[in-house]
Image 1 (cartoon, helix red, strand yellow):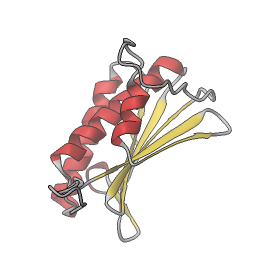
Image 2 (image 1 turned 180 degrees about the vertical axis):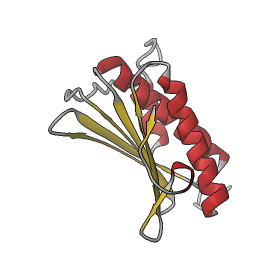
Image 3 (image 1 turned 30 degrees about the vertical axis):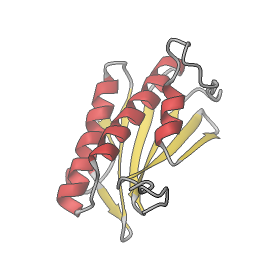
Image 4 (image 1 turned 90 degrees about the horizontal axis):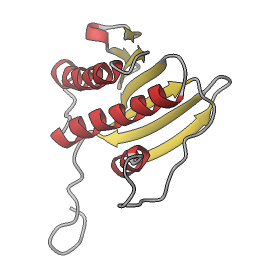
Amino acid sequence: MELTAGGHDGASLRGADVISVSGAFEGSEDIALARDLARSFLMDVQAVHGVSVSGRAMGNVQLVVSELVTNARKYAPGPCLLTLEINGGAVKVTVWDSNPTPPVILAPDPMRIGRHGLEIVMAVGQSFTIHREPVGKRITTAIMLADDPGPDATGCRL
């Protein structure tokens, strides 16, 4: 793992409200390190910058990081790059890898064993994009830092 961010504890403040951290991961054992980076980054965001991060967001970001880094390590040669960026009440999770082929997004199938990672990422994220790069591709999703209160007893949003 290689961290590539400036500032306090690996986080950098760009502008008034953007906080980010990046890491490069090369081996399958680095998947756990990527999750650890996500967890420690969000904990620092709370402690150092006073940004509120719900328990659900903390878990979902770690899950998404795990799924995207696992796919990158499984299907692309060389390292993958993870960037976490907080802006406007959400954390944007971006993973770059060297394989230009976009992932196959399968229809939900409860009988299928495995290959549900992108379904999970798309279910917990607010957005999902795949962008081809001159070398490889970049997959990005955004996860809200605060829990959505959801509908109340009448079915209306709170």
